[in-house]
Every structure is written in structure tokens, then in C-alpha cells.
Amino acid sequence: MCNFERLRYEIRPGDVILVEGRSQVSRVIKNITQSAWTHAALYIGRVYDIHDPARREQLRTHYHGDPNQQLIIEALLGEGTVVHPLSKYRNEHLRICRARGIAPDDAQRVIEYAIGRLGTDYDLRQLLDLARFMFPYGILPRRWRSSLFSHNAGAPTRTVCSTMLAEAFHAVHFPMLPFTERSEHGTINLHQRNPRLYTPRDFDYSPYFDIIKYPYFDLDDVASYRRLPWSDKRRYCNDPNDCYIAPPPQDAHDAGSAHRDGQQELPAQVSKQSPPRAARSINLLNHAVRAKRKTA
Picture 1 (cartoon, helix red, strand yellow):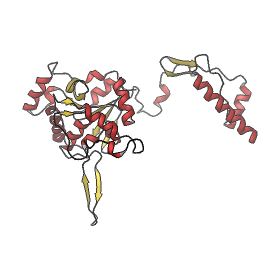
Picture 2 (tube, one colour):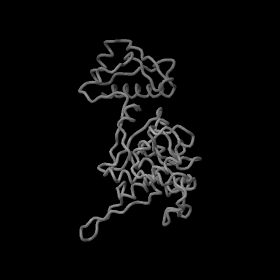
Picture 3 (cartoon, helix red, strand yellow):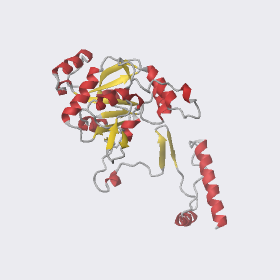
Picture 4 (cartoon, helix red, strand yellow):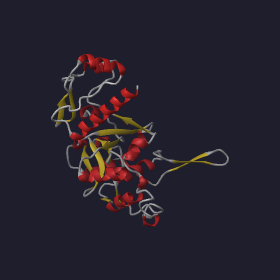
């Protein structure tokens, strides 16, 4: 779904990278946030892209690899806030969220803020607290919800990935999902939301971040999709290990008339490799089509 080579060429320092994780922890986060995006990281460029000499030296104390490597900063369970090469996520589904219109010097300040958080621990309690906070009120009584988010931001020595990034953008007063308030005089005031309530999906939702995708095939040219290297037109794949060949219609004349009526039936048994759930769904569709014909 993602062309990593194009992504690493086009990405800019200060971009937020969303990751669709596949680990057990990622599956838990998906259930908590109700989103496919389970992790967020900040792209900072290469070591020599850091303008502030003090922050550049601080980065070198946490990263001892090739200075030409493209780097990200992220907060990970079990590791804390660390720096890793961008290539770590070469084989993952990624999306870039780019702060729209952010000034280059403010992008550097965002990066410098993240570098300043290197070495801080991962706040597991915040993750558990966020899970409780996001439960519907009908499931958990309000008194059971944590008050951790209400007033104090908590200990500054711990953080999670999305909170660290939200704080970095708050430091330059860049809006993510601000609370908008209109006064009785008609003026509008913006209030930043609690950064501890942000999750990776909020960078996707924010109207102030551009969503940039780098798909495997570039379809910028008109009708370029017609030149895609499709295999057998009757071959369908749900995933690499679940493919089947759909048989041709038994009666071409009947199939053609049904197609013209917009009521073509699907084969009840697609193949021996078809999952039972798919076969039951097809039978239900065929039953609905027959019932519609009788009423007509």
C-alpha cells in the first residue's frame, strides 16, 4: 500500500508519520482508539539537518549510527522516547501528516522540542488511563474515570507518542484540533486541547494537517490505471494466502440478460478455497435477488 522509496524521498523534517502496527500492543491500541493508526513518530531528517548545535549534540548522544541516515523520534513502550532510522518502518503501512503552512523555523522548533524529550520513559499509566477515559459513559461510571487528564499534565519525565508530538506542535502554537469559542461580541478564541488526550488518529483527523500518501503505483496521468499489470481478471485475492478463481457463468445468455437487468446472480460456491462466510453471504445475496424478481 505504500511505496517506501517515494516516501523517504518526499518526506520533510517536521512531518508526522502514522504507522498501522501489527503487534499485540498495536491491536490493543486499535481497540482503545477505534482507529487503524496505532503509532505516531516525528521525522527529523539527518543529523546535520538539525540547526541548533546544542540539540544536534544532544541527538548524537542518543544516536551513534550513520549521520546520513534519515531519522525519526518516537515514544515506544519498553524503550521510552528514542531515535531510530526511518527505514525501521520500510515494510509497514505508513501515512504522512504534514502541518499545513508551518514556517521552516517553527518546524525546527518542533524537532528541537522532540530532541529535548529523548530519554524520557513511556507513560504506561497514561495509556491505561486513556483506555478508561475513552470508554462510553454507559459502560463505566464517571467516578471510575481517572482525573489524570482534568488539571495537571502529570510528570514531565514520562510520555506517549501522540502526547509528545502534540506538545511539540503546541510549543509553536500550531493548531491540531483546537477548541473554538465565540464570545458574545462575535470574536473567536482558540484553546489548545489537553495534549494527553491526543491519539495518533487525531493527526489524520486534523484539518490543519495535509494527508500525503505514496501508493505503490502512481496514477497522476489520465487513465494510467489502464496500464496496471493486472493478472487473470477472474482471479480475486483477499490477502496473499487467500486467492481464488471465479468460474464463468454457466449460461451466458441468462447471465447477459440478468446483467442487463442489474440483477446478476453470483455463484453460490465460488471455489473450494472460498471461506464459508463468503459462501453464506453470496447465498443470501442470491436469495434476495430471487425474491426481488418474484415481487416484480
